[in-house]
Image 1 (tube, rainbow, N blue to C red):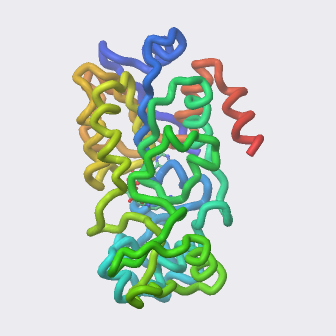
Image 2 (cartoon, helix red, strand yellow):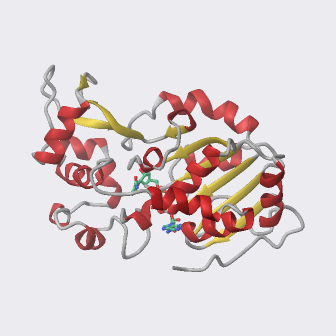
Length: 290
Ligand code: CNA
């Protein structure tokens, strides 16, 4: 794995100042903003990393069954109009990533859980739909799954609720999208596709959370999908922002006084942070105890 390559060299926030403020308790409302990169080491590809993403060639490497679908572009798999015409690419993916079926949380998910356990977690805003935050032990009230989840399902035409267990049986065991018993439309789990409205929970919490957070940590996201991409810009002026990512993304800059950047693999960055905090053993206990 890559070593975390860069620390902020500014006169403002540093990795050490973050460690000190977490240790002293002067920072205790930590907001996490995360994306597909935090699940890569679990074996779930992200959208954009070459060689492991959702491009047609990459899909054929990762998923035996997906290459035959000829997705016109990677995001089509989460496009509601595309799904209406051809549900099979998403059904095939859903079969793979349905929470509890195949994948286990990463060290980074366990870090979220550790913050929760220590009473320092304000909220996790995740763009992921793999459910691995909850599997790692993050409390449901600390979690905002910005792009939905697999625990409920509905018809994309008339919005009637469809039994989530039945949806799972259809998709995971039979490999097909169920039809709505009310209108005959196509059903899907309540994963927010492009062109759909986000879960209300996001709007209910984001304003107050941004106003009261005292540290935002952004991990494993390209910050390219709004509105989650804008969260790091909504925190109060002077709030420290830590980025743990392979790429420098969004408005993070090495010379911003409030920004600290750990460029590289997020599991490595999280381990480094926990080592400095003296939390490494507890982190490993959660990870290896799962
Ligand atoms: P993205 O656009 O694919 O960006 C991922 C980011 O993470 C990139 O900047 C990568 O460089 C970085 N990255 C990749 N691996 C690592 C790693 N090991 N350590 C550190 N950084 C890494 O993904 P986003 O989440 O930003 O895009 C938003 C979409 C992708 C959301 O709507 C998701 O639902 C969707 N998605 C989710 C999953 C999932 O649930 N696991 C998987 C693939 C896509």
